[in-house]
Amino acid sequence: MSERKLFADSLRDTLYDVFSLETNTIVCREITARSMPPTLHAVLDIAQAYADFLGKRGVPCDSLPGPITTAPRTFNTLAKAAQELIEADRQGALAKPLETADRGVVHRIRRSSIHLCFVLLRIAGVLDLARGQEAAALDDLVGLVDDNCPLWNADRAQLYALQVRGKLQEMVLRPQDRATIRKIWEVRCEYVTMQSVIQLDGDVVTRVQESYAGRESDWLHDLHRRGVGSSIGMWSQLVATVRALAEGIGRGLTAVLRS
Image 1 (cartoon, rainbow, N blue to C red):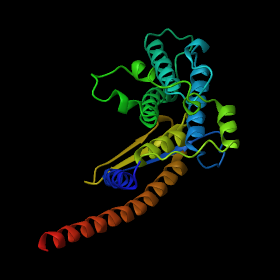
Image 2: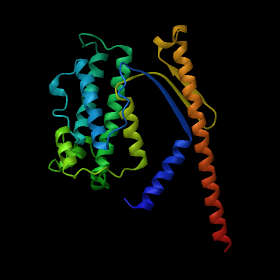
Image 3: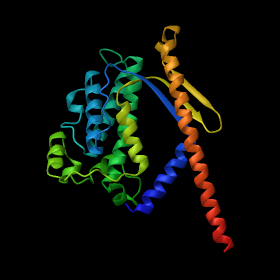
Image 4: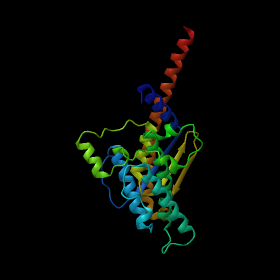
């Protein structure tokens, strides 16, 4: 990817992100306090978390990917497994119906798995190969990935082996793809208890899980409000930066037209 193309993509994604702000508050059992690892290790983290969550909610092992690898088909399989669980729950076919919070996570797993599958296909160059064809099914696109390429069919041990031999370099990703992987990795299967989305036109939507809507959760509401306030501060700085950039580009174009 050329530096000019990377800059253009970064600018476009920044402009897109300016139009809305999303703040999530998560309650979890444990905090690892580690930064996101290199891209493919993060991908394996996500896939393993999704497989573990679905397996504990009744998805049979033969419906889950095995082994967990960086192959796009891993997430295609996870998306199908999540959809099967959603359908079984809807039809009352589960021995134990899904809890409301778990149901939301399963839907998230399905959506995020499909999204990640396409991100990996794009990184692997498969979407470029399929461009111009009529709408290809996801199964067909996944089948175009070269399973013999170590990067696209590697488990954790194989990734570490590539890393030790100096053959695992951090990928150059579109800013939007990197942000997608980071957000999915950060949230994974956690329970989002509160979410606020603020639009540039002033619309604000706040969602609160019913179990955290009572007065006993006031401390969590206060924490969420503080998080939203901090995010708004950073957002304002981003808007100001984009505005200054746009004005600079405008002045440059005007000077060119006048010369």
